[in-house]
Length: 168
Picture 1 (cartoon, rainbow, N blue to C red):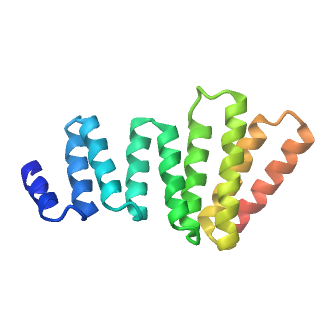
Picture 2: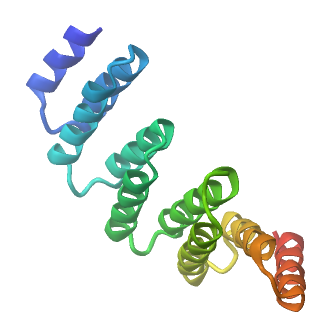
Picture 3: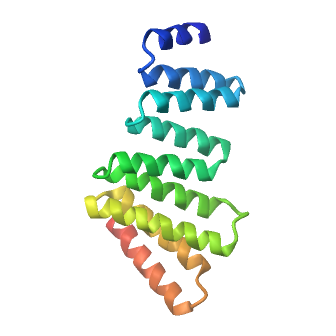
């Protein structure tokens, strides 16, 4: 399959889908450097294609490279400034990392919740009824509440998160 996809890339080097297929072949075979290289070539072939950055983000998430993941989804949002899903993707990755990564310290968790909230607010400005954004805003507020020291502020965050859960 690798040889066939390489031939397809030679025939049409601007088709990012062929790079995606080859990257997946390499990733499945454990050839991670080659997989990333194919995704980078896809980006070079189609630097204005949002799907390329979403694929890169997925790859970096699977590899546990959060800084590169965030860089990729942020680039996608730049390319699609009026797409609420592009901003929502940023928020979801920040929530996931802040919620699941137990190695983060409190300052990092606070920063990730804040950055996620900034991204989700952009999504909600574009579409106030975007259910995923409403739900993730609530989740991010719960992340904030979990690290909040002030009991009154913590309860206010939880109350707002509950209201968003009901809305979603």
